[in-house]
Image 1 (spheres, rainbow, N blue to C red):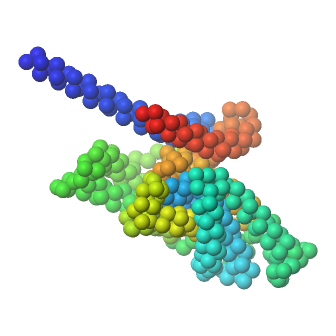
Image 2: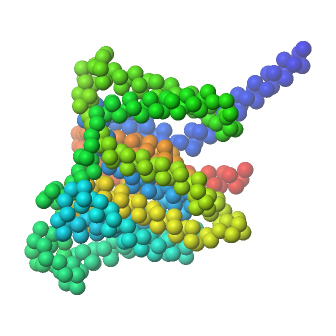
Image 3: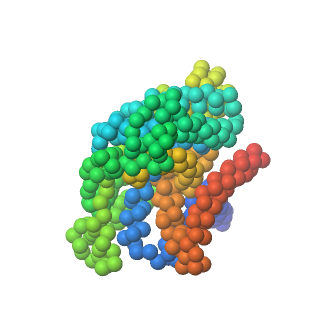
Length: 438
């Protein structure tokens, strides 16, 4: 009997140690996300900004930036790291915007034309970038970073010197008074331009949308929890499904309360007027579905195999270089469309500057969500957008309240953008060294 008790105690102790190891590993793998979560909570408290303002700004930024961040996932799956060359795709989108603005095609038709025109440019840029990265295997991130700078030089030359000289264009609104080069800013609201072309098509109240999504989530997770035939992966994720099921119920109650105006504090009632751009939301969801479904195809499996081990991929008969070029090309095309979504929401295009920080901010947001150089998921991308832009919203006001100078918040935001990339890369190198020792 004593032996049985000792065996039970040893088993329980072993389970506790295993659980402790899992918790430590989870915290280590998500240290950047946890740090940002703490910073965001502190920033929201210190900024003393109204909840309505924060939520409204955050909603706008989520739908504005999510597409660009999601465009980074496929190259990570293919083992090419963080694609700083999405800047090249953004340039393709801006070139299409300049052409469509010159022709005067308004509204959603102009936006669709921009999306169509940007594809061949982005495909060409993506193929060239992919071939370059194939020649610098193992150094893809630094190569893609330098590629963005190099492409920016060509872009500046074409639109600052080429337009009006060897590229004929006559347009008083777009062209500088000298007749050569595009103006620094292009107003996308003029002459019924593409400003809000996507966002203003259909809008629904925020809590109606949340209620609908949470009901669908509830049904999905209920199915996962109570279905008879469950896989090993589903059994391992059972606790996650329980948490998501409970969260869905909570969101349903909160959304119903806001819709019916029951038990809502006066300070939060203003949130009822917030609306969600439905078409933009569906475009983002479509990209999420695309990223999920493509991994299940033969091409997606090739991405995974190449990302895991190129030598094994070669032995399996996979054309590694071709797969890598396709991954970068898809990412570049998605980045072009993401830049169109971004700029139609902003309403003004800085001809020579709108694309410059796109890669930096998108990659920083992805890393903040818990992604790494070798692994990135849709959930990490969306969580990263929320955390990263929450900090962007509150940091100037928090710095002003704390230090008496809002400019400190601006410096902090730039520091965070570069710092999170450095921390994530350092942790990745540390993790690899730790795994090798193990």
